Amino acid sequence: MSATHFALRTAIQNIAEFTVPLHTGRQMPQLGLGTYQLRSHTVETVLRALESGYRMIDTSGDYHTQRGIGEALSHSELDRSDYFVVTKIEETEDAYEAVRRNLGELRLDYADLVLIHRPPDHTVGEESWQALRRAKRERLVRDIGVSNYSIEQIEELVYRTGEMPAVNQIEWSPFGHSPRMLDFCTDNHIVIQAWSPLTRGLRLNDDKLTSMAARYGKTPAQLLIRWNLQLGVVPLPKANHTQHQRENLDVFDFEIRQMDMAKLRTLNEHYSSMGVLPYV
Ligand SMILES: NC(=O)c1ccc[n+]([C@@H]2O[C@H](COP(=O)([O-])OP(=O)(O)OC[C@H]3O[C@@H](n4cnc5c(N)ncnc54)[C@H](OP(=O)(O)O)[C@@H]3O)[C@@H](O)[C@H]2O)c1
Image (tube, rainbow, N blue to C red):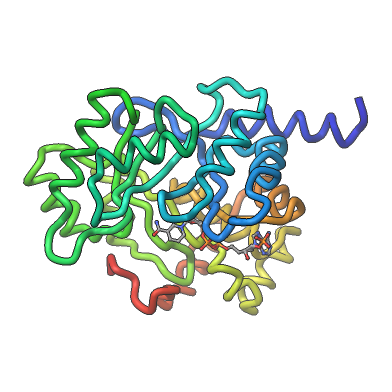
């Protein structure tokens, strides 16, 4: 076995050990691959990610990546229980039918996690939530959650239905985050998944970030990912390039000191690719 191959296998074994518990008792990988705008070469990109050690893939009915992910998973030699697939339904569609369609595209019998992509305009998505609960009872999905929800919207959803989401997937980085949301989710055993954890590259050249990363001998992207891990937040960096994919996994061998965690928090400018963070 070559040295590179050995190093890769060791990385794969290590990464499989890093999981976070969901309030339902299941475990979720602590880091996943985002697939938004991964429309070309999806099969090859996902296969390379699985080979590098990724065990969670994030997608959505509207990303047009599900068929490619399904094909990649069907080519991989992994057992179904070895990987974790997250998908989403649109708030405007029939959620139960959307789950079935997504599963068909993914070639899966069940999804590990299905999220309501965003709250509808004038409600908290109670109807979609009840449909996801039905899909869960029927074992089409193991866990259910929300995305882009505020604290108040989660509280209202739970008040109306009695079921706490396992996850809230939100845009999240040192440049745009909310300590209040983190406290709320921690108190209620909701795991935050961070979308655009790398700010789509827009803040990777920030002076404070780059100089701190250099002190740790890491890249700015690795520092952003590690910041999430240490908060108990699950980052979903998207990376088409193999080098980026591997770099983003190489974050389990260092620790950001508490003083630097606090400094990273001060970068908060409530940055959002959508203009405004919907949860602050
Ligand atoms: N729930 C929601 O509403 C929602 C919304 C948006 C996104 N998401 C999910 O979150 C995932 C991640 O968010 P995102 O795709 O918006 O942005 P992101 O992960 O913050 O950034 C992706 C960009 O960063 C680059 N990159 C990756 N690793 C890098 C590295 N080590 N160094 C430098 N650049 C690097 C990628 O380049 P290459 O691809 O060229 O390697 C790509 O251009 C999405 O793919 C999607 O699965 C969810």
